[in-house]
Length: 94
Image 1 (cartoon, one colour):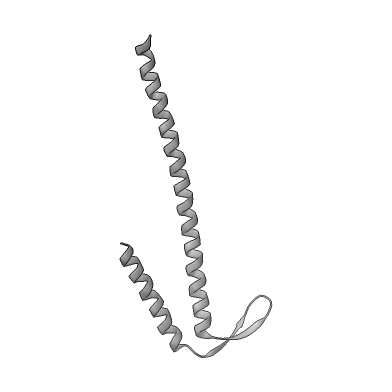
Image 2: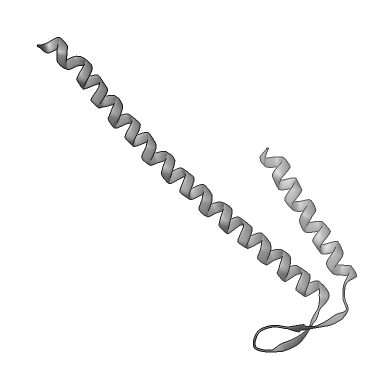
């Protein structure tokens, strides 16, 4: 599965490079505080890279949240199993 994901990522990167090579014209880009002329390929690369980074950040944070939740629940289950074993053993001692 990792190989397929890596190949898909490489293909997306190559497609981005091919599109960037075909879009060399200058465009005016207005952002909040100023305006500038950039190559269209540069703007496409920044948008693609920014979206990719934001996507990885969001997925990473959600994965981390899920792992922490899983670890807390695993500890809680282990604690409850110990308590259950103690309760089952207690009547036998009386």
